[in-house]
Amino acid sequence: MSAFAVAVDGPAGSGKSSVCRGVASELGMRYLDTGAMYRAITWAMLDADIDVEDAESIAAAAQSVQITSGTDPHKPTISVNGQDVSEPIRSADVTGAVSAVSAVPAVRQLLVELQRDEVAHAGASGIVVEGRDIGTVVLPDAPVKIFLTADPAVRALRRAKEDSERTNVHVSVADTEAALIARDEKDSTRASSPLTQAQDAIVVDTTELNLQQVIAEVVSQIKAARGA
Ligand code: DC
Image (cartoon, rainbow, N blue to C red; front, side, top):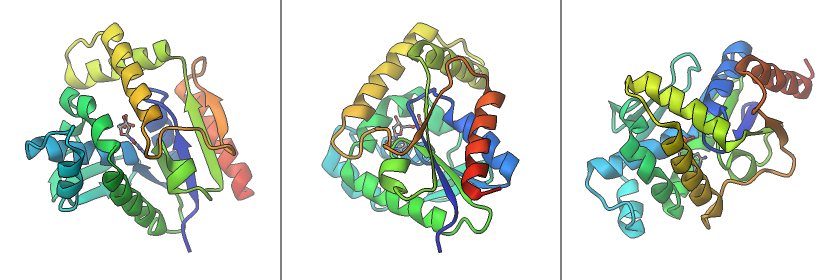
């Protein structure tokens, strides 16, 4: 039997990672960041000097990339062929190339299979899975589906702050907003499972909410679904 799964989708900077990690920690659940998996495969392509616009080469090379996800919400990890790539997958190079790589159907097929496998092995504690197509494609039968949104300006502000803190280099909010809007556009208009809201998802607009408020809202939806 598959584990109890919570599907959380939404655009870049909507707060998915912080919210999902907080929710999973509070409820003792596992946590899977599927965006990190698309970033990891993109990192592997760049590392092997493969042209990210060449879908055929990407599809072929993806078959020999081994991606492993650590699902502890306190310390999520991601590795490619045994090498921890948690840091480099957040680089600007990977962020700039990830939409092209994640639009390749063979890549999606491979990763969706891995994601479902991870859910199947999550055990009794259940798992919170974040991404773009979790409620629509990966886990269409998930008992709880959340779609997080926020105004682009607020998303850019959050992402620029996060990136500045992580790299110790000032990151421009205006540049971040432009890049974020471009990435949303690509992720929402690609042919293969684009970012869309599942019809049965609960929409949470995080523009005016702080992290604790969003976590509390999602936790209460999960408790209601679990009958707790
Ligand atoms: O959540 P993130 O920004 O780390 O995701 C990186 C990219 O991966 C994002 O631009 C789109 C892609 N992605 C996807 O296509 N499907 C998912 N389930 C998760 C991410």
